[in-house]
Length: 422
Image 1: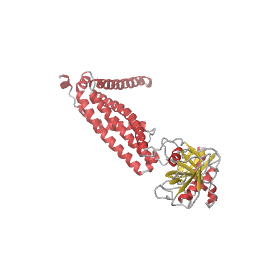
Image 2: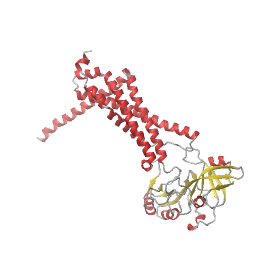
Image 3: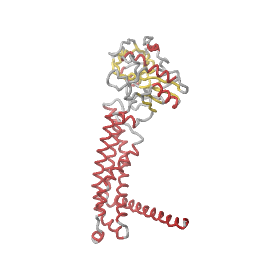
Image 4: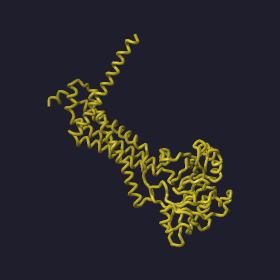
């Protein structure tokens, strides 16, 4: 009995598959026909979806850049950043919360097997003066604890800085400062500074007074912009900015085995967030309320606008295709099959628009960054994420599904005899 029953089931399954394949073929043929015969309406739908998706990706890219909590380039394998549960507040009140006891806790992480190096990082804009040229500029000064092995922080190599952090002096902050500073090419140009030249770092929050010597001028790696940046020892920057009280740092960078780094980070800072470095994460977007609200509002506006406009253009297309739908009815296509053809045609057209919008969105982000960095912004104001590809198609799909009831209702009301008789 079982062997005899399975054959009709297989035939039924094959028949359904063939029917759906045939409906899809009709939908594709309809798209090709519309592209030639009803070019204006089809292109209108494609352009509507493309422009809305492109605008959504641009706004989302800006939101991701806004939420990026690691604007300073480095080659660490992992970073530890404060979260909302961290109890240490910012020195200036502008940044978010910071990590405390950074020297000691980073040293604890570095002692674990598999860890090459761990260093806190502090970034502060400071007024830097070149006494020789008389130039003074605000430079982003980054403090780190250089290791024995070569590494990159703030896009600059640390080779020309003395390993360790002598001024820290086991937390007393009374050791001799090294007075070493590494400048990016952009910082050196803005200060008209040369290697081995003298610089003065000015800060109203700290008490450390020392003259700094430029040990190297390097091109900032991994940076698409010419942001002036300088690299110094962490404890010296902490003393300059008042962050020495509590040993505050923005983040802790860790080089080495991922598992060991995760374990060490969890032990040293149980309430902090551990982030594997790479492109900006969606997690950072949810941590920034302004960026999250911006992206959500952009999504709602894009979905609503796209669905309304697609409904209108798809409805106009159905009105123009009533005779074709009636012809399908006369050759044996039931109402359900004709509606499937309309739905598939609309979805395929929207998918083409989403693909075009993805390209336009990425191009818009690149153009926006180029214009912004050439005029008013020191760094990129929008970023591209790999999730933009599925995001673009999902938004187009959702908008089209919301728009489909209107064209499907029009198609269902098509009178076969009336349309064939025209």
